[in-house]
Image 1 (cartoon, helix red, strand yellow):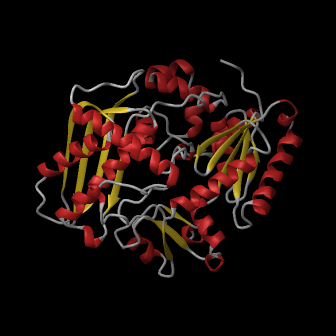
Image 2 (cartoon, helix red, strand yellow):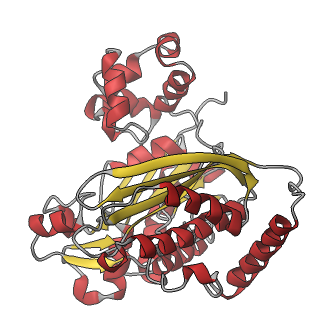
Image 3 (cartoon, helix red, strand yellow):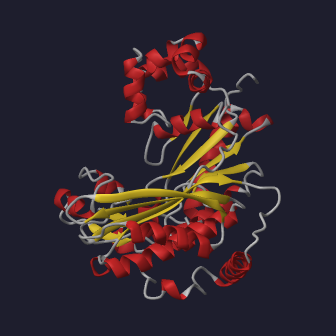
Length: 404
């Protein structure tokens, strides 16, 4: 494994990106608490919020709870296409600074630095120039935090130290002091569940984690422990992309769609979107999972295994067969469909059944039309009257496609 080199990664994180974009295009919202929600009713979820809203304690919570915490909060319906437009503008700008830009998510980017760029003064100057260019050429209300360190993960940690609009250069010699200040959940990749597991193994603080030996972490945590040993010390181990394990879509139904017939139409639309994402990644699924949450409590969960499928008709048929098996006696509130057991084959599977081959050709044709003229330019009749339901989601992960 290559020895880490200080200042070889510049990690850029757009601050409160989705909320800031709305404040950028709607100046009256600037300086005010706002939250972004796919559904703006009280049962919707605040998936993004401005720093002004965070000051009131608004986190990942329901719209109703956000209004209780901050009565003056403005609820904005999410506009993924708008945020993705600004993502592309930022990416184009960063590519004028370096050809080695890696998209980490819709609001996160990593730039590999080399040669003279790794000198402290040069790296600091480059970061300041990027910040200024974003304000002048993309949006004057958009801010970013930048961290510079030996690995993309450690650069991300550095960027988290000062928000919003921060700039931190973190050298490896500073790691012991840094880990004494951070909580375990301050580390990207450590959630409450993993923190609990570490606590059970005597690792109570980040400093405890850092001081553990490679052999100790290997025994206690296996391969994951070895990865964390090197990650905490600034080695670059996070460059390999993990394989997609599942593709899913979930949606909180608007009040007028909380009945068995309307929810079925929304599910058909969600299944079609999942199938399109599957084909975009050249994947095939052999498992379909459905979850329904009912208004007032209770739910339905079930999955089935199928022959390898990727066409919309087959995916919809599998999802709807699960839906028909559900005992829907209360209004459905939330519907989620997930495709799993994904495989990438060298050659496209050929079916013996003509109708399946026809469905595959139809799906490919629909993809070509929608890719050229925009999402939902053409869609199956089963999705009629669901234009506002299950909209394109904000692509928190890979923004390579907007159908997330």
